[in-house]
Image 1 (cartoon, one colour):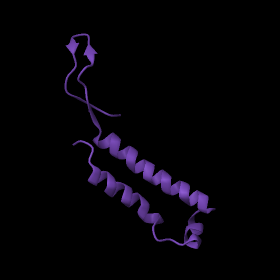
Image 2 (cartoon, helix red, strand yellow):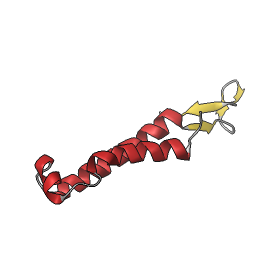
Image 3 (cartoon, helix red, strand yellow):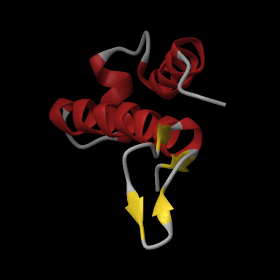
Length: 78
């Protein structure tokens, strides 16, 4: 499967759920500062994006050259 905006959006939405609709006091129960909570939210979002690209990212391999000739097909992003 290739990259999909709907799957990526759902993954990012799910990553943000633990931080949604929380008061500052509620966030401070789990994090030392509001800045730590913001950083944790951004890390969760970034993780969702990276996981989506590594799971669903496929790039065409056209134009690459191998010893036996041209490379065709697709290469999975690692």
